[in-house]
Length: 428
Image (tube, rainbow, N blue to C red; front, side, top):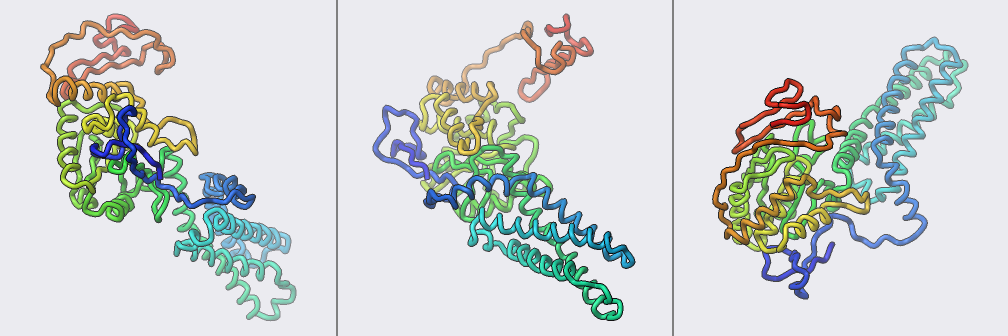
């Protein structure tokens, strides 16, 4: 848990005005198991080997070995008249793979802990398959078949044991589950995740009443992003009947039934900004929901839960007086969304226009009383770009410029075709 000081009168547990902080504080769930870990050699070793054991490369290597072992068994069974040398080689490789699988299970038990590992039925089945097939492989490998042709039943029994080893292919189910976990962690990079109480989601409590997360996905995308059923289970478990989800993606949606139809849409293109009008509608909607019940929370997402999500989270912070300046709110969001224990890479709002629009909302709230400012007609006379090296081909020949007003294309410049271009690197 993180302790954040705040003003008791605010809508959430944060107040960015340090000079006005009260002695009250709120606990924000960091999504990590905070049980005290003893500073022992055992736990230090576990901490060091965990990234390797749970890495994407190690999981892929395990899947490859399962497939290789499956092929070896098929080859062994299809060559009853093979030479002794070939048979010994196949058995040696299969036995080595069996010991690797045993080491894999033991390492995962060591890293995750006995109770956590065996709390999964799939892990229990996986461990049983590994142990049973190892015993079968050892019996098959170390049994002397010389003269066994005189005892057909022995040969039949041993070949049956060999066929049993094929059940190891069912390990793919357990490996797929692990691959999903490591792939999601790899895609989410060092964004703060919720990893306790049986959940592992790219989801962060920015405050005690505001959640930022990546897109709740289904189908193939759920392999590397938050599975929508798990997100729904999390929200129903933690905030039943007291949550509303805000989908900021203009490019895709999902069945709102997963969240009991408590879903609002704000259509924002990727790496873009909302209109000021949409920002006002959004904050009015959030304000109404949050004031209806002190237990109510909001869960906001775009695709990665960073740019567009951070923009609208910080806009709400400004609207609800949790922060007086846009810059402070943006810094706070980045601090909460970034898991510095994994990497120092900043996971806040980085697109300049998105940061500016949070500042625009601050002005609109303070100077225009949450009203749209009077419209002003401006005419763009020219667009001049300096120092284009490193962008595209670096010479402007592949440069395109689009001006979109009220979601309609009003101007386009394509330098490759000299469309609306007077010079190679200058569009007018």
